[in-house]
Image 1 (cartoon, rainbow, N blue to C red):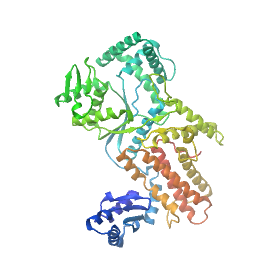
Image 2 (image 1 turned 90 degrees about the vertical axis):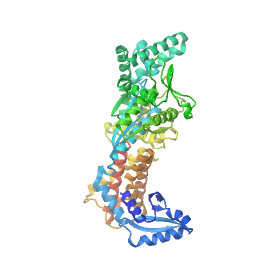
Image 3 (image 1 turned 30 degrees about the vertical axis):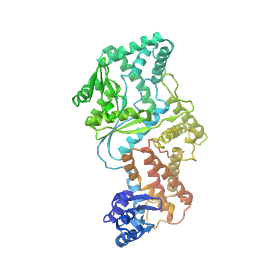
Image 4 (image 1 turned 45 degrees about the horizontal axis):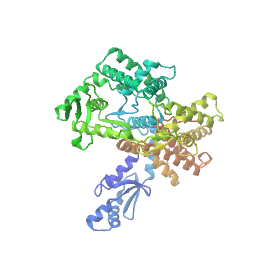
Length: 556
């Protein structure tokens, strides 16, 4: 709805300004700064220019523009009462579809893509949650979205994990944890004995070559090991409401010919240096080193297969987005620059900073990591401690605690801008009084409770009409109307934290509205009017939580 209001403002100003000069403001519903630009051209004061513009447009304002005024050269627009009434009624009418858009296009979002040599650790969670939230936002906007997990099944780490299983077998632990045990054990052998290390590394080289060449026995070993790890990783992700549409294996691009195709293309464009190993000339492009794309023994490298993967993405998707840790910035830039040299579209990359831990750095190889499973269980137990005294059946307590825990993790990992480092503090994340997921869930449950009690007292169908009384009502409704406007911004900027902020602000404004207007105590004709606002708030909070991958609880 807010987009309609904005288009009416743009229509008012079409003879004087374009949309670049129109923006949201804390001092008005929308403001226009074009007078400052025109003042320089006409050598007049911005306020005088603004007054002239307002005088020419104010004789016939469109339905959704209530008033317009000039303040120090800014042209401030305010939504009409008709807009605010219609905004609530549209939310009530569209209900679960509110916020949905009709954008088109095929979008691929690649996220998580952790090496299958052990379980996800908490550093991986931010990748997964950012990627999953973006996919939900693009789907809400109407795009045809695919999510993929690109699994490294060909690197040295994977070969060592295979050798670890050969020597030590697999325990009966959760599959990804069992793989990690074998991987850690083989690395411990390498660190303890140089001769053994040399032997193991030679063996790793041999099976890597055999795997790339398609040896059946070795391929089966790799396949079984990777699938074991992925089985456990999927379980972890599903516990956070995250699912991938498909897993893409690096080796697919060896088998389907895309690696050969990309190497041929690089060669034909004169970018390949063949000197034993094959290199792409990047030194002449300002890099310190050239990039190896084929070893002397004929095997490909990660970057080679990644280039092939992105050639495939170019053929199948309009937009393709990668979620990568900040430590991948160099390889991400190399990938993008090489694709540009090949006249292929590079990916849109969201780089994120990692989650800091008091335990220090994490390393799967050394066995120093806090698994995502441990963190999820810890947060669940703490959430249950908060919920357990509530008057509800035991199974319901566990379900609510699980939803609160997942919400705490998902919201805290996405609410901060990706480029900012974060520290996860479960105590703060589970604080119902602070600005957290549980606060938003509680706000939604409060709206549901108000409406249940109103139904018990008896009420007709909700519809808003008549004069709105207070600034808190106007602020809340205007904010509720911006759902699709915020989605548009996230789709453009790839910053899901903007949407998390929007949903949180909706909860804050709703609670401020309810603090000032205890709806159920209202005896005048405003009772139904305010219940309609409560229901509109419930719908926005519910739809917003779902887009964030968080369950909108009706009772807490």
